[in-house]
Length: 45
Image: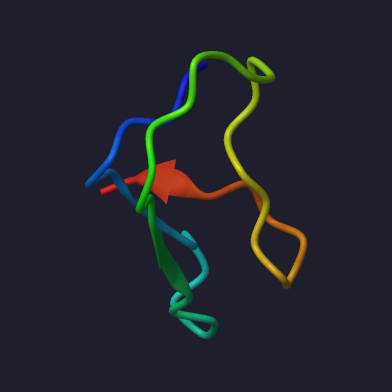
């Protein structure tokens, strides 16, 4: 899964609330979503 500039990923845990915004596009990467600092896989917002 290539990350695209402007994509926003959010932790699904309502007690965490972490969000990450992609600032630079990539050309490839793992087929898994990024992981939050709490350990849960993040979801695209």
